[in-house]
View: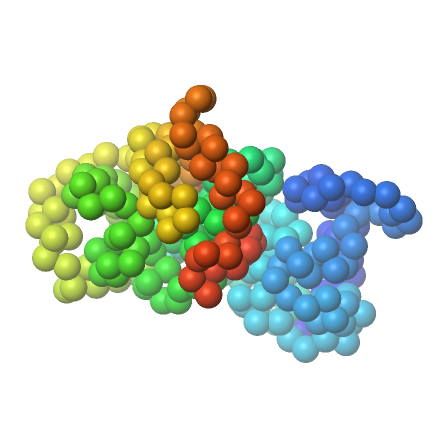
Length: 292
């Protein structure tokens, strides 16, 4: 680990960012360029003291998970992310599997979406970032799960709580959509061990998934209409639009109410309620951002 180079790299990347680049208000009385240290710490989900020590070249070696969070907070490119890992004494993440480095372009779009739920996820169903309203709608999908349960596709077929976020009469169609979309994703990931692990686990634990998988239906999810059950505001009906990266391995999912519909007032109420009525594990965006 090269503490001095790491400190300099973090500082210069921070100074190059403006609050508006990460969805923050510009505010007044900014004497120095870029973000403040505590703002970076908040975006990365770490203590300000820990981040300050890193910039002062006296902090402990960051874990790969912490470097992933810093990469998102500082909006690093893939090359910059890999450089950060090497300065911290870690190997850069491999190209196979789910790329945890969220596309900076998708993050900028996500930061601009404050009045509607939106989140970024992988093509394997792993949520990578949520905005505050998405967390309020479906709970923390980023940090509340570990291992294979990070995939909302896996949770839908194995966790009744995840399935109950959809009305009972919609669950069969939702299952079909998820499996057809996963089949399309797998075709773009030949030999990917992470994808194979999800398929094996689902075939072992869910007869419903196995039956749908054997149908070989394929359909990339681009848009649909979604009804989500919320414990405080009831069933919210939203249009779901999906914007993908060129590789289609990451998607920005945007949920919008139709003008004049009940969902407009439901989302307004939800923005006030926030996450107070959700499970204790629910936390905030960036929390780095409804199931996709």
